[in-house]
Amino acid sequence: MLGSLLAGTKEAPGLPFIKNGKKYKVIRGMASFGANLGREVNERKNTLLKEIKPFVPEGVEAIVPYKGEVIDIITQLIGGVLSGMSYCGASTINEMHKKGCFVQMTSGGLRESHAHDVIVA
Image (cartoon, rainbow, N blue to C red; front, side, top):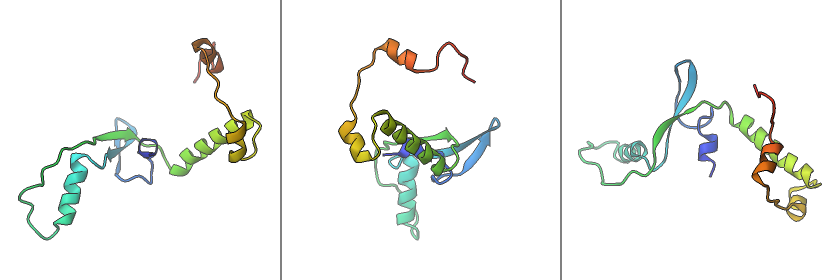
């Protein structure tokens, strides 16, 4: 389930457009009104669409910031996994499963683990 992670990428469906100087893409959930209407039109290409089958739309149609290419996102994900592997001294994913453990953090510890006392640009 990577829909929201990959939405807005070059490879995702939808056309990019510029709004107020920023690049966006239109996205739609596959249970949205537009997606259902598109399927209905494709199924009945050669017939007049007089009435649409009743359905309850569940997805949304929205815009998301353009994110570039999928490879850039995957590179970040791989970097996160490799970083996690290094923290637990693992050289393979299987080894990380065996050696890794979850640690509960306090809110103070979480604050300290992030950049603090600086202005992040």
